[in-house]
Length: 205
Image (tube, rainbow, N blue to C red):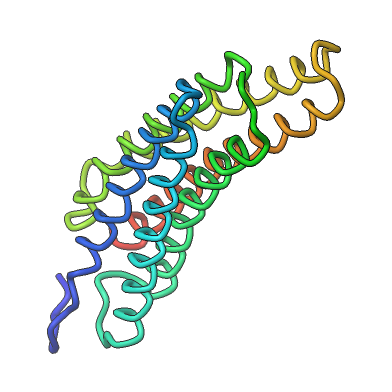
């Protein structure tokens, strides 16, 4: 058991939970945007608000990191976890923004599955964050995130094959490819979050 001679700053746990809960909100908005083309601009604006909220969470974590002498785990890991959570948000918001900017009316069916994977990844990431405090019962979380990322890869490859099947004109291919690549980046970023948490848990065990 470690002897602490000075108080440790524990507010990072709440900040990480706030960031993860914001990803849940964003993933649900993204699901709405993909499924319904009638309110896309309004939903995309809500996602931009989520992205700004996420940026603020990241800035608060970074400021707190600079002001704190003793942190709950390695400073480098705190920095990396904040950054990867922010990466997820940026990729989801970018995908939504591209759908609106490109005026894409109909998306391939597998895009709905792609977003469903992101929504599930967001939910279990948010569920895992409070367990950082005890570093217990986290193994199933990163195993499930890895499984979801593999599933996302399969959907992504299937979408690419669909795009280049000849069904779409070249301009539509370029637009849709940009969107599905951002969604794939979000899935990859969720895995980077899980890898960071696994690294922290191993160091703290």
